Each structure stands twice: as C-alpha cells, then as structure tokens.
Length: 330
Image 1 (cartoon, rainbow, N blue to C red):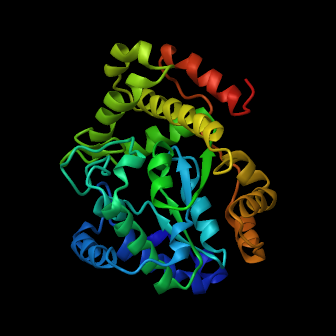
Image 2 (cartoon, rainbow, N blue to C red):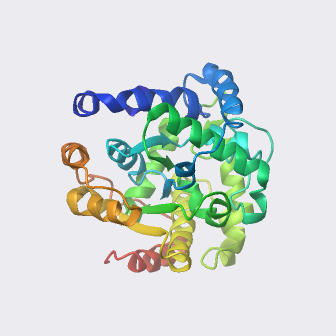
C-alpha cells in the first residue's frame, strides 16, 4: 500500500491523507528492498531545494520514534499522524542522507560507509541548515505544528540531534524479544532479493557489517563474544543481536536524557491505547485528540507473534537480563 494508507485511515482522517502522500513522495525516499525507487531523483531534487529554506521555530521541536524495527513503530507513527498537531514521516532517510553523507546505514542512496553513532560534532552549521530547512518546508506545506520522524536507529544519535534541535522528544518503543526477533527474521527472509543482495541487513550485508564493527565491539553484553558473533548467519541470531544492542542503548539513553526519552512498550500501546497515547501527549506537550484515540482503538491489537523463536545460547543471558530491565517477566 502507498504511504501505509488504508481504507480505515482514509475514512477516519481524510484530511491527513494529503500529508502522508506528500511525505511519502517528497520527503521519505524509497530505500533498498522497496519498489518505486525510480522516483528518488525527484525526491532528492526537491529535498536539496528545501534544504535552503528559511527556518521556522517549530521545526526545532520534532518527535522521534526510535527503537528496534518490527516493534510497532510504523503503526504508532500512523496513529500519531492522525493528531491534528502532527505530521508523520516514515523513515525519511533521504532527508538525513542529504544532510549528512554518512547517515545511510543500509546502502540505499550512497556507497559511502555509514555510521550508527553521530555526535554533536557532526552537526555543523551546514547539517543544521539542511535539516531545519527541510523540516520547515514540510511544516509550511502541511500546516501542522510538529514533525514526527520515525527512524529507529536515531536512538544511537541523540547527542547529534540535540545539537540540531531544541530538546527534541524521543519515544523509545520496545517489544518483547521473541516477537521482535521472529518478526525481523521473517521480514528479512520474505524481502530478500538475491539479484541485488538486499534484505533487512542492507545491500551486500552493509548494515550487519556496521553492527559488527561499530556496535558489538563496544557493547558490554556482546563484546566478549565478538568472535562468535562475527560468524552468526541465521536471521534469528542476527535479529537477536540487533535487539540486544538497541535495547541496551535505549535503556542508557533513558537514564542519560530522562526529560527527552519516553519508554513505551508495544504491549501497553496495543492493550491500553488511550492511556498510553495520553502519556505520549503529555510528555511531548501535545493536546488531547479524540480522533487519534478513536483511530488507535480501531487499528491497534495485541500481537500474535512467535514466542518460541530459537537463538544462539550465548545471546540468551543478555536477552533475559535486558528483558527484566524493560519490565518483562520470565
């Protein structure tokens, strides 16, 4: 479906359909493993023009949806997009590639090696102008107050984003390990393109190589097992490694930036949508929106994921410990 638009979404919030289509075609870009990549030159031409735009103050206060992919981040973004103050961008990695050439983790737009960690030093005046100019253009064209940018890996870049924006808010969305791992593994298998060597782990395994070289080596749970992890090949094991790294990072960011990072479990979102969304509203300084709540209750349902996924024995202690820290019981 184009721009994640469904009949339920259009009928519930027809006025927001334009915003989703605008974002999809002109701000998000079409990454590897997706169709419609022929449109990318038009998207990038538009973004480069927008990057020089005059900055408006509200562009400096975005909300980021972060965490591990396959944790419900897209449906949360679509729910938030119904809010009258918000406009949703679903992984607008084209924007970030225009702003910083080392952003591209999966090799969709650049052959330049990507970086998970971007720091405040990477947010120079040129990067700031590009991002804020593009965000400002989006806000002018849509008439909303704030941008919601779903980009899970931004959990590794909070200092970088703090140097661009004025205390942005981060929703750290997490989901129990077994369901996340099984969902990631299934997606990667289902979307594997042998001809171009693309799947969840990027073009020619690019993202997985960056995970090994940049994240595993400095993670207290996984660094002692680096040699063994380098040899992992199963989709479930690789997904487990990503879950461990991201959950550990999220927990650290919650402690380091408590006023900016809000932890939200997928389970609370799907079983108690109204209360969870009101918590997000309050944290982000948003007004209550009954249409958003109604839409959430229509589309959010508890998962039926696979609770019995198998992973390598060396990964299980880290999964268990992090699960307990996140509030999951054995």
